[in-house]
Image (cartoon, rainbow, N blue to C red; front, side):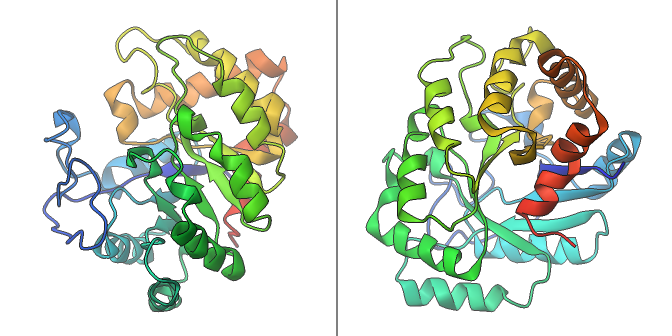
Length: 296
């Protein structure tokens, strides 16, 4: 069975990308891992390291996701994808809050990149929980909607409530929630996250990535059972045809290996569903991502 990892990252810390529009993390003009105290991530992570791990799980393609708000990083990711067969698509960044004509200009500059499959803004780090609802941002997202370009939602649980409002304002925009909107797994907290997730799922154009869970759990003490209530909630809300597997490698290595992420999800799918039939497995590990990102 063909499999896709719908959420992973690469970076090269020797690269210097000007973040000339919106700062990302703590105002840094770099990846910011060292400044954030995430020293194990403060090195380069490239395909030569991940591809053997993908092969061990029979995963042939990935979706490569941006890490910082930089046109330079997006260009680097697209160049890497062009030279790396296993990268099926890139989710990059464009400043959606700038005037609409500049959003159009930046998207036009990327229009020749065959592997650009979506955009993402790290809304998680915006101090305004309703940043995505700002008129200038809605104008930018409207252009994505017109172009049929999907949008990745990196949210906190508190920001999840904006998704139904986005759905109302942008009914034809395909959106995918990253990392289940980062629920408080370590604290075993379900409410109000679960209710907000069910409301978000009412729009059939909203998908959800089963990714990033172990880094929201206790990094040293988590078990696969800690993830079960969250996997169950998402499956009930979205169904298997609107959820997709993502490793969040190498960020996941803060709490566990690629193998542990993959096996923990398999364990939970079997636990929640009773059995994992081939059709459901195909949907979660391939078809949902292929459909959402319009992969050939």
